[in-house]
Every structure is written in structure tokens, then in C-alpha cells.
Length: 209
Image (tube, rainbow, N blue to C red):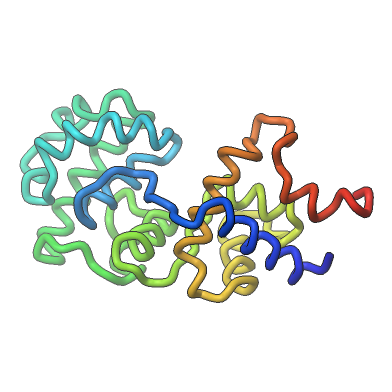
């Protein structure tokens, strides 16, 4: 198979598997989505979803988050990894939103990435899932699978994102990145043996690769 054929196979098979894809992280608006994504670094989505209901009850807006002290935020998210740093970032993020954006989440990558705790991946998720702009956030699942499928030779997620955007039309980006993550978790986990990874087998087993 050529790279173009492999990319088409991924799109076709994932659409069969996941015609509808929910967003992993529970949220009520763009701000709570951004907070949840920022919290999810080096932590499972399941753990984030366990912690955020209480957090959002207490501090579901930038105004309310900014009024809390770092230690109060940390107490609410203490079960999440890197809670010290994340608590400080959430407070600063809220203050920045109030000072520079009237408490409203901005709709550009540049402005989002200036916020505390918001890197390019978080900004991409907010742009795609929060605002509906075409984006292709790349996490470790996507990077690993695209390398495995020989759809990228990228040494990091930034290069892999560029390759993904070249392979698939932007109309597919917002849904496809979620589909690949679902597939990675269900069929090709990082610590698994890949027995269920039928897409890789369809691509390469026929030729004995």
C-alpha cells in the first residue's frame, strides 16, 4: 500500500468503527473544556472527569477561579498528577483571562498559547472541540499510531501534526483525531501486544512486513 492508500484506509475503517465520537472530557462550556484539557496532561481523562465536577461547582468561571488561592485549587485537584503546578496555572490562567480578555476564552492559537498551562495541544483541542475550527491535536496515541502506520516519520508531535494535516482534508480533522485516539485505546494500547490492531495488519501483513 502507498501512504495515500494507508491514509484512506484509516479514514474508512475508523468511520465504520466510530461514526459518532463523544468528547472525552466532561465540560459545560469552552472555559471548562480548556481547564479540563489543561488538567489532563500526564493524567487519565477518567481521573480528570472524577475531579472536575467539584472543581467546576466551586470555580466554573474565570471570575470564581481567580478568587481562590493556589492551595485551595490544589485541594480540589489533589488526586491529579502535577497538582501543584496545575493549581498555580489555573489561577494565573483565570487572572489572564480577566485582565486581557474580559473573562472570555480567546479564539486564536496565539492568544490561547499565551495563557498559563495552555500549550499547543490544549489550544488545538479548544479550537477544534470548543470553537469548531479545523485542528488536529496530536497526543501520544496519535503520534505512536501514525508512526506505526508509516504515515509520519516525525520525531515529535509537532512534525506528526503537520504530516496529518497534509494527509487528510481539514473537513476530517476534528473528528479523525478523536477516532484515532479511541482506536489506540481500544485496539492498540501502548503496553499491549497489538493483537487487536487490525488496521496495521490490513496495511502490512499481506506483504509480510
